[in-house]
Each structure stands twice: as structure tokens, then as C-alpha cells.
Amino acid sequence: MKHPISFFVSLLLVAMFVSHAAGVPTTTADSSKTKPPPSHWKNDIVTALNFSQVDFDNWSKGGEDNVAWLWNMTMVFEFDRPTWNWRNNVKLVFGKNRTNGREFRKSSDEINISTVFTLKRGMFVNPYISVNFETQFTRGYDYKKVPPAAISDFMDPGYVIISGGSGLAPVDGLRFRLGFASKTTITRQFSALYSDDPRTADVVERIRHEPGMEVVTEVLRKVSANIVLASKLSVFSNLRSWEQVDVQWDTTFSSKIARFLSVNYNIQLWYDSDVSRKRQLKQALMVGITWDVI
Image (cartoon, rainbow, N blue to C red; front, side):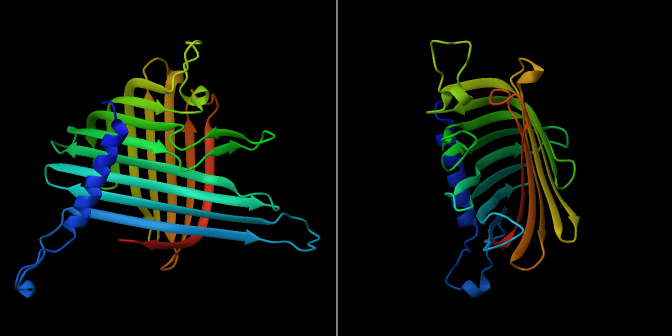
């Protein structure tokens, strides 16, 4: 497939279009006697905006002025039939902060889109095909260097994983799948950091293809009356060695304490030996306004 991103975006647009069309009732000359057909789509769109600000003036205990904001949106479009299931997930996150009068700096930046088509053939044999796309909105910098050095940007890197195999959903809220996969890393300016093969000194690879296997586990559980746990663990191996295993673990605890007020705690663990030999960890505690779009 020469253009996996274009193919995947087309699938997503079709899903959103069909989702919208499915939600429009069919009308006739006598609409009072006609009921709209039941929709097999289950759609969920939730967005939240978090903001914090601290300002000091002649404060003897010390501290630094700071302003921070974070926006995130999660979308699920799922079409479920007795013999097959098509599930689409979109996660968008972006935030910035400013400390002690310095310029605003990016604190969070994520675009993650996935689509999974599954045939229901039995509890242990459910063939599937999936596509996952991941990148970021804007340029990222390493602020430990002086001056700050650019290290990433939109589609620099971008990741596309296409996989197919067998899935399992033993209970509601638990999904598991295992299959053969192809991971493509796409870069432009920062190839040396993400896609270049050090074994080919005379060539700089802007695109790297890695065949292998992928294991994905997803959990969505209601921990208590107002706390929801959502967790996704993705493991990809190019089968060369255990050191070549890529791990992404994204877990969020969400609590809606009022109609438009929520608390979210997110922790992400990422390990990719091509980027860093040490695991990467990110935590975020967010309190802010949230609302369900649909």
C-alpha cells in the first residue's frame, strides 16, 4: 500500500459520514406515523478544556508566575452488527504553559487515530484488520539545550501501523488482539532521530518499514459510580530481538464530579529503542470544564 495514511483518512471520513447519515431519521409524507429505523452506530464525543493560573506580587514565600491550559477530545464511532464490528477511535490533545514570564511552551501534543474492523466468528476466533495513525500538531523543542533545539513536528515523526490477526472480547469492556503487523515511521527534517538506519552511513532514510507482530489490550471499566478507567497497552515487535520491542501504555482515570466539571488523571509510558534506550513517562492531572458533544 503506497499511501496508507490517505487510505486510513478516507476510511475515517466515510465512518463519520455514515455515522451522521445514520442518525438522520427517514421522513415520509406522514412523519407522525413513521419511526426512524434503529441505528447500529454507537457514537461518543467528549471534549474538555482545563486552565490554571498563578500570579505572585511581593510574595515572601517565593514562587513563579505560571499560566497553563490543556484541551483534549476523544471520539468513538462504532458500528456493531451480529456478525461484524467496525470501531473508530480518535484522541486529540494539545496544551501549553508559561512560567515566570517566558514564552508559552508546549506541554501536550497528540494525534492518535485508529480503526479496527472485526468479523465475529466465535469467542476465540475473530479475524480483524486495523490501522493506527499517530503524530502531533506542532513543532516540539528540547528546552534543556540553549538555545532550545527543535526535535519533532507534524508528521515528523508520523507512525502508521497496519495489522491483521485474531481478536478476542471475552467480556464487556475488555478487548484483546494479536496479529502480524507492519509499522511505518515517516519523517521529514528529523530523520536522524526517528527513522535513519545507522548501518547505512551513506544514506538517510526518511521512511522506515518494520514488519513484525502487534499485541493490543484495551480496558474500559467503571471503577465506581463516577470513576471510569480507560487503558490501552500496545506492544509491537519487529521480531529481531527483545530489545526491538516498542511499548505504548496509555491509561486515564476520569471522574465527572458535576454536569460540566471533571477530573482526569492520565499516565503514559512509552518505550522505543530507536528513539531512546530509556523508557519515557508522562503524567497529567487535569481539572476543568468538560461536555459531551453527542
